Image 1 (cartoon, rainbow, N blue to C red):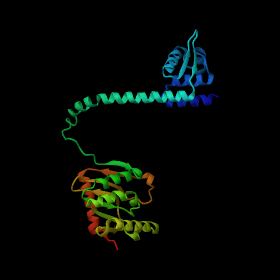
Image 2: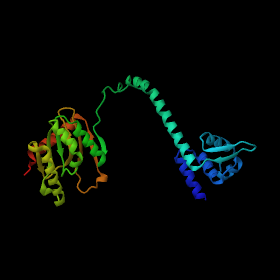
Image 3: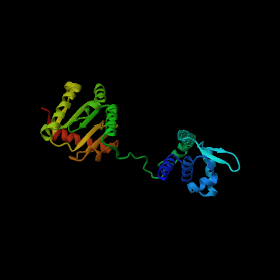
Image 4: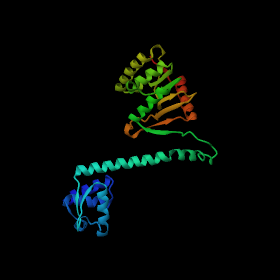
Length: 279
């Protein structure tokens, strides 16, 4: 039974007990009601420590003590132990939250007096924030479509994700946002990707109507979107890496005005000089 006892002990340490507590309780669950001296030999917790460990386990509601000379100890059931550990964890979290909350105002007041006072440069806008490709990048894209007020520039292969951001894009269009989409040309894509692209273009035509502005290029080195580069600009982008699995790719999010304007300039150059109207 030693492997099973060790498994219970390992699980109990992951649930918050220390080494001695977990070993004592795991062996007590196997032996049943017993004396501290007997339990000490079984779980190899020193005799000088076993009473303190059992007292703590009792206070935590994990062990029952039958007073006497000597006292006898028995474990609660696995269900009761789990419930007690969860209740204790919740109480500890609430205590920590209460402590942090009680110091929050004092911290902010004191910290504002020193925040960035020594460097002399003031607060700097970070250049980039990295997000994973997939659900996280999709949520970031939706946020940008939701907050754009004037200009939305989209760089994409075939815009396969359009159905997932359709609602946010419709809302942007209804606000009068100017939308431009730069896509890969049909000849630069595989047959299946070209078919997906054509399906997305039909959906875009339904959304944008006469205001539809789509151009195509054989090369779209950066994919993503840029919003309001002349205002409170934001951008989300990734470098095109053919053949690299999505799990190994990342996207960058930036609010740095210089970088946003630089990406917007790149888009405009591609739009004017290295793309053609959709036929």
